[in-house]
Image (cartoon, rainbow over all chains, first blue to last red; front, side):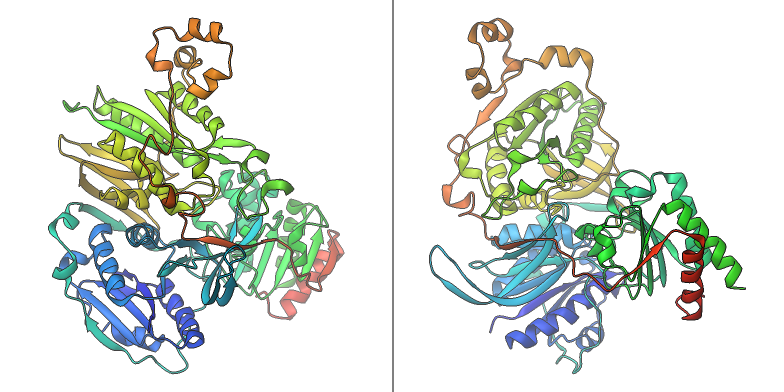
Length: 339
Length: 293
């Protein structure tokens, strides 16, 4: 049986959230297909790593453990991943759309000549009939993503090449413990079989990983601004509302591109996906590129001068009016009423 | 300063400006109707061009060639590159490339690169029409070269190696790689230098063979007489010895199954005005429901 393999990445020896999210999704897909879910971990000092992966649904855990393999470097990780995929022939392979996954997955897809879809927002199993040849395919992976600046949603398939590969951003899928833990069987990969000296030519001279200072993912309340906010100075007023309410300020891609806010605060397909209990969208029109990153919020308030802005269709409360004036009134009203 | 000069190729793409997308942007087969959109120099490819020009400054005698794959009008970004400091441009163009996904694209580019045999290949991290960031690493794999992705700055250059600072999600890394290699450049890298007036004068008549054919010959022969640098090379599938079955829709493992225009399911949303009373009522309601506080 051809299984599903999730490449699990590590941050300081801890499995990244995005990988656990992919295992959760992978478990669901494996149940639909009736195949096994496998995890691939490449790094150093990995003993015991299988426990958490099994709890998130992994039946088999492939472990490549060698001091040359941490921190991540493209070439040795590519060689091991390709070697394992050639040996195991998975039908589906999932990677985080992170600086590691987006470096590694295209390299693997190029070596194996398999199709890869970046930044998927949804993964579903389904059938396909090729209209030209009449060929029917069952149980393909539908790789669904906004495309073209978020103006359309595309469903991509790889009918003839395996594995079907996709990357998914952190926070897009839910992270859950499996209803029944996976079997958690550890299989050790013989690294010398796949990695050679030429894979080690790139040397890491220095490496600094900063603490995540900006934590919009964990914020219960998010005040997000779009291009309609107008300026960096106006964003400060949004930040004030966020501070008063105990939340974080965030931005749409258009606002980040315009220099109103920094990329670490970007919500959407090419930014962060969030699920706060309250999302206040200020001067955001609501392109799918953006809404893909916030439509799971418990409550959405939209403030926009345009009563027909697409985001209003997602909103629980749609306020028609000038952003700066409404935000200032909110700050004032909250201060008066919360005491 | 370094003794060794480098052969540098920048991979650049002319992209539809996805910030200005109209209704006729997609064709029935799910591919992009590029003709209907304003075309721009992909932003991160400009960062890549700058990094290449910095390399040239560090290693005098180096040559920067910009390679683009696209329709004939993509020659515009090659001229733009020359105005900013590139030495030459190559347009990889053929109807057989149409509909290529990232893998087929990287195959075509790798064929052209094999013909040039550069020391350094520099590309933007990703293009704004797809945001995939796949072509750089896929090209590197096809040419069996090391890759340094998300580059921000060249830290050091020696005869045998290049040291690069790369931006990660939550930090940075400084890595050293031997030549030849593929570098992809992040938007956080320095912006590209502007067009230089003297270079605009020098290169404004740079044309591809197809563009020359379409123009007045007398005018052209006068302008380009004995000026080899005004010839933008144009390469077809045959010129780069590429295999047809690896190109275009046929050579692309990924297929677009369906395209949907974005339609939101309307929620039962409450409409409010921006009056003091409406905002105050909302805030009180949010506080009493413990959504706030």
